[in-house]
Length: 217
Image 1 (spheres, rainbow, N blue to C red):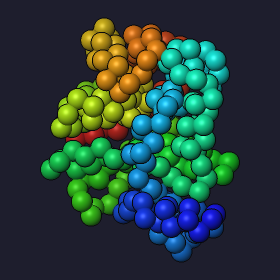
Image 2 (image 1 turned 180 degrees about the vertical axis):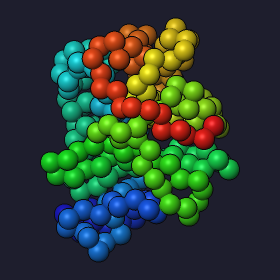
Image 3 (image 1 turned 90 degrees about the horizontal axis):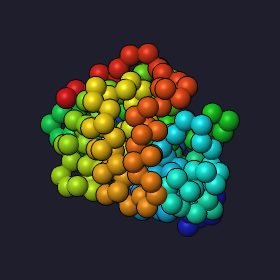
């Protein structure tokens, strides 16, 4: 890593007490977790982040989201860069905070969803893209609704949505809510079709981790 890149990364280090984010080359270092907020504005971010059943990083995905495939792939490469673990925080005020972490171990890429009861308190993994936990629609909506403005609410909803594995009680309303969030977040493609795939992922063979993560509402 170049000196300038190392300096930039250290300046953006995100502390996650209780969560081991140290790579094999930095076992005694401050950790690899960095604030990923700037990545939210990259073209193709939501196509790269949202785990849609049956879609790879190909032209079908690009067409669905209205993005250039090259942009989606470039953003995915940024998200999964082994030198950093991008972190996307979701503040819940006095109810604690959540964090979405791209766990970029070489040969073991994944996304961890963490929960902490408050500032300075330890984080625990409540769900993971590898399985072993999920979030209910009510929990995701509650976290999103706590955010201060429409864009923040949309982003929080979409950041947490990949851990939704049970069909919401009112699928049509959930599709409308997700479509509006996608539109607010700047997705130019077929937001209703994307939302439908998210809500009905279990009908398309998606893996379903057992149980809800139990985020405090």
